[in-house]
Amino acid sequence: MSANELSVHCGDVHTVEDVVTALSAIRDQAAEDIRAPKIDGISCFSRLYATITENVLETLDGTHPTRSFDDEAFLTRLDIEFARRYLAAIVAYERRDGTVPACWKVLFDHRRDQSVGHVNFAACGVNAHVNLDLALALLATWEDFPPTPARRADYDRVNDIFGEEMDDLREDFDAFLAGTRENGLLDRLGNSLSDLLVRTTRGLAWEAAERVWAHRDEPAAYQRALAAETARLDNAAQALGWMILNAPDLP
Image (cartoon, rainbow, N blue to C red; front, side, top):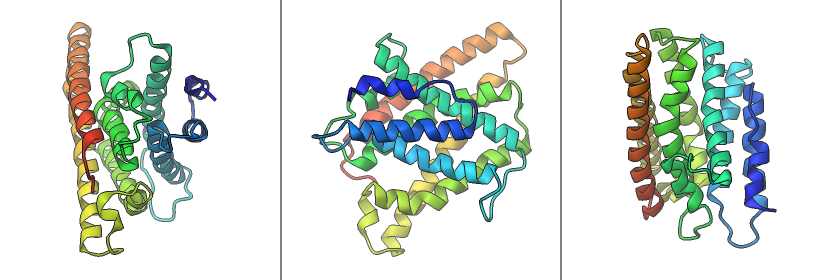
């Protein structure tokens, strides 16, 4: 099975259920393609992404026991816009048309590098998706659901989903401190550091989108701000992606 076939799962998505289906298919096919080597970076990231999105879906459809969103339409649209950027990056990479963001190319070019650990691959994908794609997904969503304090509060509730899943995800991806005593000091430290990183980077994505959104009433200025912010975010995420892939241990 060719890696180029992943794009067959990257058609447009219209519901969060579509997103989960696409991510699961990419995760499974990328893993099936492996005989040797044993690790695939796209599969690693897609596994994490599908897990988080399944939890978002449980919250949106009311089956989560303790959490809800006030503006479900906003979160649904954001989830879809967010996923579209990952799927588009896969398609662009396979077409080799020169449009794939540099931060995604770091992961895709090294997806079969066996010196890279599972947790590094997953973190590299999170880096590209949150540090570039999330701000752009927010801007697309705000066209119909402009930013408000209430929507920011819903946005921040997604951080709680990462917090709920963090311990299991760190163990699943064999993070450095995940092998310590369950719920011991080092284990809790690893969870806390990872949770803080997620909250910080998602907060920075919102702020980046706000810088562009401030020009929304001036189309030319908006486009200039969007191009400049996109380039800045991509360059920063590319550099960070390289560091993540080469980091000896991630907590």
